[in-house]
Image 1: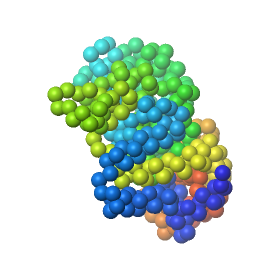
Image 2: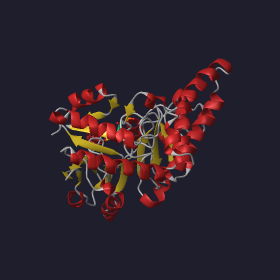
Image 3: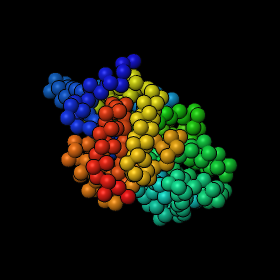
Image 4: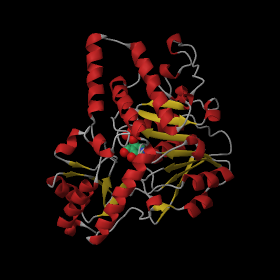
Length: 379
Ligand SMILES: Cc1ncc(COP(=O)(O)O)c(C=O)c1O
């Protein structure tokens, strides 16, 4: 494998910017740029390449499967994490005694909204509280019962970087026979995921953050033995067993997780996603996690030295790639850092600093210097 420093050379933005904002949008690699250009070239040369596009969709499905150690048949390629969540929510059945959906106060809005929208079908939605910025497992244990259909948790919280303890959550949910969904968007590509170890029911995510590419492509993992028991009403011709059957008098969903898809895939973006996923798989998510953890230890130490306060959990096992720093005016702080050539982002009173494999110690030192110059904006 090439060094992380060599990979950094593939990202032109680092020539003049300290880009440390992968929790929002990844830096653009030369490979992803070339993939977008390839799409335009193919349009000139081939025109409407439906067979080629479908082949590419299958390749992307295979790469998502490899990333999660899943089977390709357990993956639906969607158009966003929100689309994945809507597709799952449209398949839930409230005719039995299980009507409770448990989400958390750490949820990304879409994830919670997907369940609240189901109240018109009789769903009861409850929220697990947070404790010290993490999912309160005692509160979860108190809420889960034999009327619980689904427990949904974020792998990494989008506003404070907290990393969920998936085995502990699975144990609590399974004890009462509830299904488990993980919104992995803020982790996938930076935190290792192995569906065989996790043993959860659904995982959703998308491509524009740590997977290096673009908006327009999400994914959904559905555990194999749940696929045929799930009948999404949010559907379409790409979800059919035979896409070419052009059925109008019936709905015959695919035997695989493809039944959670809908219409024509997001073709230009599939080119980019394939290039992004290939680079992540080439480097390896375990290597990425090790590299980013070292950067984050340096960052946490530097923030403490200048008197800043972390709002993300301090223990490295309890946070993802993103570290957050409490601010009195997070928008002003982002602007001040931008003036210093540093790109970060913010949410809910926190500055979000999210390194990836392409970041290095110099980036971290630049962020610490930038924060030191703006101490009055630190909470
Ligand atoms: C944790 C999490 N879930 C879901 C989403 C929404 O993703 P999409 O816009 O692809 O629906 C985001 C976007 O930032 C996110 O951070």
